[in-house]
Length: 111
Image (cartoon, rainbow, N blue to C red; front, side):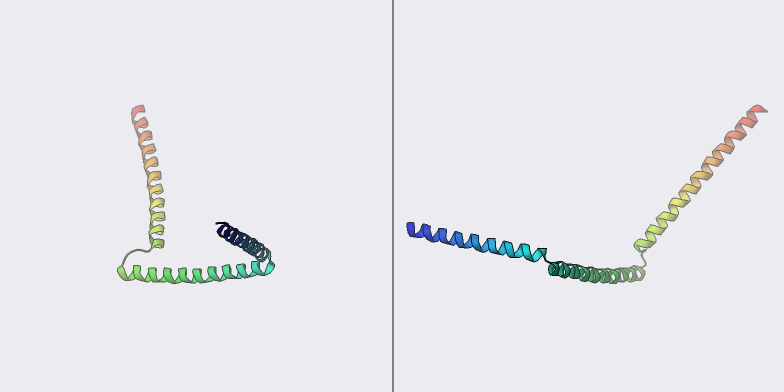
């Protein structure tokens, strides 16, 4: 049993040293200017690729919407904006009409 225990302890010590060394190396690598530049460059490439893919996907979606004769997201948003403006205008007309009716009622009561 003592042979197994010492082999196990030796393996644990080896693993601990290996992890400590690897940890130190990773810390130094991550703190380096080279790593920062490489990471920034990679992120910039990812953003470039994803924005190009997003543009292509949007153009495919627009084409499909047109082909299927359904409104695009932008068209629905624009329609919603216009309907909201129309609702505000109708509310204004309604308020002015109610005000005019009140004035007419008061005038009729005064006569």
